[in-house]
Image (cartoon, rainbow, N blue to C red; front, side, top):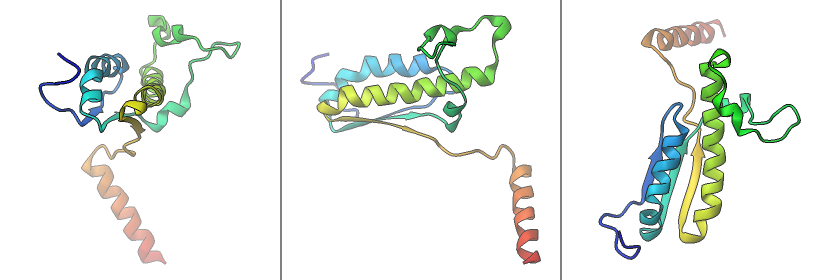
Length: 135
């Protein structure tokens, strides 16, 4: 595809996947040329506040990407999720640094905390109502 004429414009790209940070990275790399051509464009990477509960540092405080591939006996899905969300955040920052001079902005967002079932929502509403009546 020629840089001067993409087949279709791409003005916004939303990357949202739970643990697969590599998918975001590859997709954006493949579409960078199209994003630049159709600027102004935006990349939104869905992260999570859970990025705060991990890091990518070794015991000496240096970045260690080997922690992203922990041995199976040490694997914990929540830690993998937290690390993927941290990678999403770091990726978004670097992507913005590299692409903003070309009219492409990148942002990471936290979508908010989720209610898993209607039962939880009803319980919260009931608790709120009881507290309001007690005032």
